[in-house]
Length: 121
Image (spheres, rainbow, N blue to C red):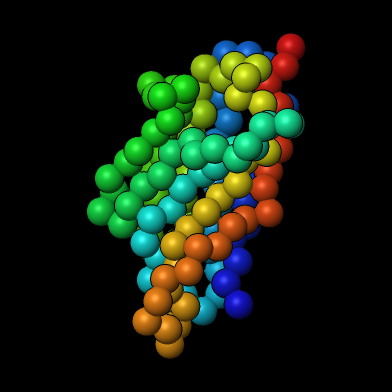
C-alpha cells in the first residue's frame, strides 16, 4: 500500500508564505510526475503545479512567480513553496503522484488526503 501524506498547511495573512510537503511511503518502485492541486469551496479541483522526474515544472497562471514546486527523490517527497499568498489561494491543497508499485510495470495516480490553506487577515 502506497500513501501520500501532506503537511504544512495552516492560516496565514495575505502576503505571507507557507511551505507544503508531501511524502510518499510504501512499496514504491518509481515515482514519475508529482503535483499539487487545490479545491476551493464550490469550485472544481484545479492544478496548481507539477514537476516531472526530470524536474520540468508546470504552473497555473494564477500562481506563476509566487509558488515554486520542487522534489527530493531520495525522500520521495514533493514541496510547494507558496509566497505572496492571496485570499484567493484559500483552498484544500492535494498532493498527487504517478507511482509504480514494487513488482508492477504500470504507473498509478494516487492522491493525498489534503491539507487546508487559509489566507486571511
